[in-house]
Length: 435
Image: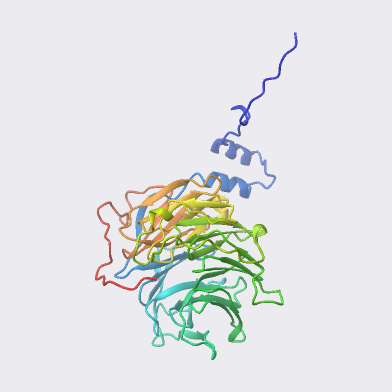
């Protein structure tokens, strides 16, 4: 009798499908030294920790009388930087029960703090506003209460040029990976690079035809830059090229202004948040050398005060070069930020973002689905930051709260915020211009 082989159509059988590895099996593998290192491999760490997402809470880190614009962990997670509308920055020590490490009051700002960057050695903090000047503060000296040019000098770095027709504002500031340079994006449609050793702007790139809302380094080399603009384009710049005024690549696919870009750090992939209410995942190997014409908008709107047109929500760019698109969150009124989750604890499996609907969204990179939605805040969440090693996420909202989310719950912690404590605005709130 001849046996017929059974063929499974539409994918592998249940027996062939990869089953999840239990925590017990991971621990057994560590005890028997399967990795050959006497400990968990980095892949095992990521696999175990990514199942424990920071979704419990939240607990209060700080409660201010102005909108919280920025929340960023340092590279080692020991410090948290909080930036607030107006002129207030606080540096918290996450290893000492979130105590204030440094309290900074800024001066000579134009309206508000627009961005903050911490140097790689965590010695200096740079802050920008809607002016062409970036200020530098030493965050590791003995001065805890830092009032600009009163208790401590906040050195000003001038980015303007004699040829500039007007005084521009800076939206984005980043330190290079070696800490020797600062790069900024501004509403003068340009990217500027400042050499801290030479104390001057050494490169000025006419990058876009609209505001440059974000610029960042691609990897550890400092040679490649990514920029995003209100012209809806993501551009790639190679500083080693002779034609520095021309990008080495352009990535099209968004239908409105780019609000933020985060690099995966491998020189290939990055994500962008956009006013078209999407996050897109990009691969540099798919970029083009020229800009492809975009279909003109079939709608007119202003994200600062209008809702996104429902008829435009699922429009597609005819030359979309992105690998994936993530929908669900809302990008209104301010330049909302998105990030890859940490390599150490999640293997960068997730993308997370703030949202104007008062939630933090966590997407699965592989499926594009929303896996968690953190709800508590009473207003827009402009920024959020996931601890590089621990399952802790901090969100900053226009309700004035800086709060943290954890993987485990502790009802005995008095800083835990209960439902009903939410508010739409900080205490003493006054209506303000948005950024």
